[in-house]
Length: 186
View 1 (tube, helix red, strand yellow):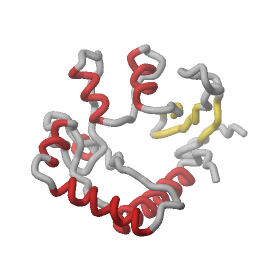
View 2: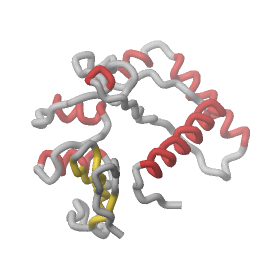
View 3: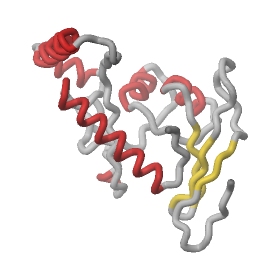
View 4: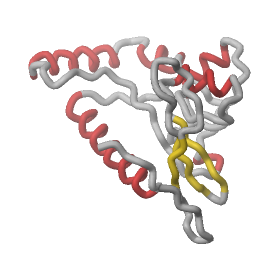
């Protein structure tokens, strides 16, 4: 169902399937349209950063919210892209010239949490061994320099702390999506 925005509606959303898929393996993605601050924006689902950057470079979309590390690698390789902002609380060590969204007056922080995850059938002992291995690796000499080289910010949670963070963040994003009237999967 589509609802037209009224003068005080703030944000309204609608579904649209008018964008072709970038991948021949799947059906065309649906774009979610939202009325934000007096303008319509379409949020298009892609299967990853490569597909989103391809759409951006091909002129199929005007902007992409994506991985700063991935985009910076593309820029270094000669892609005609420009970074507008990083969605982190602080400037990224590998991208010191790119201002945060909050520095530009937009209160938005959306860290991309990278990690390794195990399935539900992994034993507790194996899970703890992986947590210990990653904790050791992150404490190793050279880890911080390598992280900065890739434009990643420090975010070193493992085990129960990481699990709690992910669960809290998913709940926060779900509430935000509901406020924005974006469709949710159960």
